[in-house]
Length: 443
Image 1 (cartoon, rainbow, N blue to C red):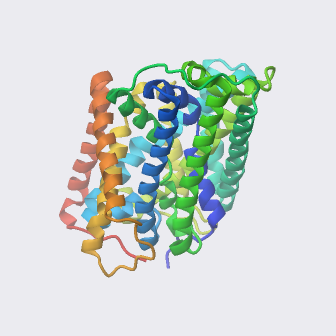
Image 2 (cartoon, rainbow, N blue to C red):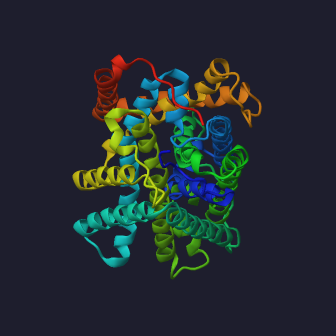
Image 3 (cartoon, helix red, strand yellow):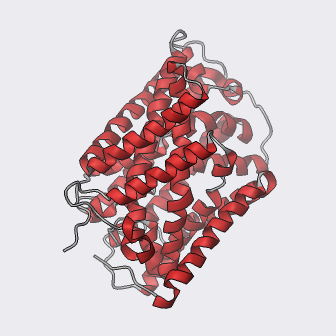
């Protein structure tokens, strides 16, 4: 029997993966923009609640799929079963060559930027700092699942405690200004922008599906982890936005250039910048580690099913990790770091691909219920088909919005992304098109 994933992730481990990836640096960057764009403090809190509800509808869809097909690979598995091996191949291809390495590189740049402030690093030093984070965390994950999950758990606990500290500082700040001020009138365009930013900040709730084969009691714990993680982060985001509003007032929050620093400064004026800088650095490391941990499982699933990427489909029995997939992912991330050299716009336009594949996975809930009705489903989406439909509609909206944004700002980035996806399709047709449709094995 070939070596494969072992069930080593508890409910706590699985929840830490979700929370650790969702809570990155986005909440510190997007909260003021969201408040300014929506036009009122009530609207600001309402749109964060709406974002949490939409993320939860997606989490419920993934909970059904992951508990029915508890294999590493997530969307790769569901789309392969629903539409054919070509669909899973395209998802795995896009994640392997651009989406996942770009996400890891982007968060590494954020970590290096804030770490560089404390160590006085110049551009070259920050570049090597970003690369060092990828190398160290990749090596930790290669050494074993336990090492990877313990690192993730530790970083998640620290960043969550830090966020709770900001909430406490904001809600106990003296001399809070009034909330009634309005910065701008409500517009449809403002609502569209805020939803894009909010759903971006909630990104990561689906990551646990990529390690489903490694979850203990998956039929029970996958659902619990997805629901607990998503609802927990929603509560934290509402509380932290409430703390920003209470400490700074609506106008102060919507115009702030460093909202977390300004909030903590109300209580600790002499150390706010350093505290927040450290917290953001830790948050970035938590996201990087989570992306490395889960992303390699997608490449492993791709290699296990498709001869073109067979070298990625090995699982080291002694270490208990997909060593080749982790190494390849790390090398591609390092290549982007050294070729790009900064937090570049071109890499950000992977969003259309992300929402396209989200939509495909949402629709696969309908497809697989019809195509494979006898497959045991320990959990079925609560409120289906309404809940599943809401998630699919939100994916269509985000796909349209991200394409429109790319076309208006940097159409070249969208063209490059389209070429990457199309090249994957052509490679599939050339290398495997004559093999006929393949089914992904079911455990």
